[in-house]
Length: 386
Ligand code: SF4
Image (cartoon, rainbow, N blue to C red; front, side, top):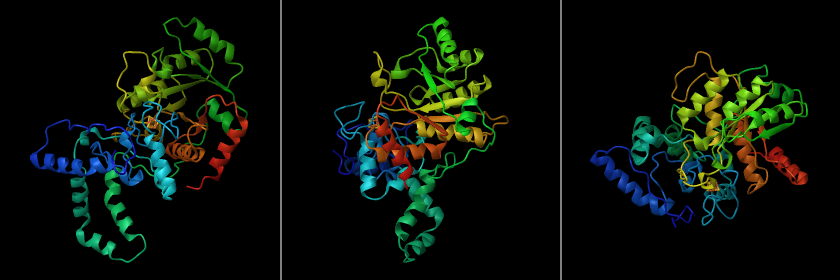
C-alpha cells in the first residue's frame, strides 16, 4: 500500500501515447519511482495532489477527479468492494486537516496528451518563467502562509490550464428569463413534481407514449433515464423529443459514463436544437453493473461536476471546451443528482455545493422514504461554511 494513499489496489501507471525523448523518459521514471510508493501515483500527468489532501484520486476505479460518486460508503468502494472508497478517504483527511475548502475547486478532466508524462518538468519551467528572484522574494517576505502561497502560485496555472480555469466560486447563470417551464415553476416557488420514465428496449414507442400521456397532467416534467445500470435502451434524447411532441416537458438525463467530451458537447447542441431545455447531469452507474460482456470500467472521460462546468460555459460563455466560440449558443436549465444518504452528510453537502458552483441549478434525488434524515441533510447544506 502506498504510504500516503490508503488504497488497497496497485493500479498500473498510464503509458504515454507516443514515444518520449530520452530526457523525458528518464524524468518520468524518476518521478514514478518516488511518487508511486508514496502516493500510488499512476502518472496521469495532470497531478491534483495539492487539492486532494495528498491522496492520489486516480486510485478511484472510475478515475473520478472531483469527489465521491453516489455509491460511496465509509467502508468500501461500490465498484470494487475489496478496497475503500478513495474519495471518502480524501474527504475524511481533508476535513480532519481543516482543508475542506480545497475540495471545492472544480478540477479539470485529464488532458490525455500528458498521460504517462512527468509533471515536474512543467512545474520547473513555470517557476523559471515566474523568475527565481520573484519566487525567493515571496518566500522571504516573512508573511504567514507565504510558502504555501508561493507554491500555489507556481502550480495553480498547471492544475488549472487555460482551457479549463476551474475555481471554487459560484457562477450565476448569464440569463434572466426562465428557459424552461420547470425553471419557471421552481423560480415561482411552486411545488413541483417530476417523475421518471424508463425508455423502451425496442423501437416500439407505444408504451412510452402511453406512459407520457398518462403522467403529463400530473408532473411538471418527465425524466428519461440514460441507460441506467449501464444497460442499453432507447436514448434519453429520442424519448425527450417524443415527449415534446406529445406536449410534455422532458428532463434529458446524461450519463458521463457513456460519453466522451466531444460526444457530450455534440449531443447537447443537438438536443437544444430539438427543443430540449432541461438536462440532468450524472456520472452514471459503473459499467460493473452492466450485463456481460462488460465495457471499460476503470475510467470515465469526465465526471458530473466537470459536465456541469463544460455545459454552463457552453451556454453562458458561448464556448466549446477547446475555446471555439459559438455564434448561437444553446439554452438550457441544468440539474444534478443529490445523494443525501450516501456516506457522510457533511461530505455530500460539500459535493452538492461544488455542483452548484459548477453550474447545477436544480437537484433531483432518488425516492426518499426517511423525511427526518432528509431534513438533516438539508440542514447540513444550510450550515455548510466552506
Ligand atoms: S467509484 Fe465511487 S465508491 Fe468507488 S472509489 Fe470511486 S468515488 Fe469511491
